[in-house]
Image (cartoon, rainbow, N blue to C red; front, side):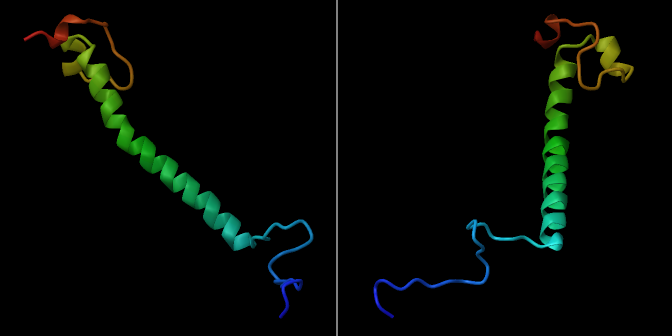
Length: 79
């Protein structure tokens, strides 16, 4: 080969983009959904803990607190 010749690969088309198969597209969508759910499931306990720390003791004990504080109080963290 000389320096002026170019190598054409069958994966590239005129636009320079690589075409993806249907299976690759499905895998990408499933992969994104999996990692989004994994991220949400790992951050939920921290949000719940913060909500409980700003809620009243009665709301926490009764199980009413999930993602946001119930009966907001700042004094629950006092020693």
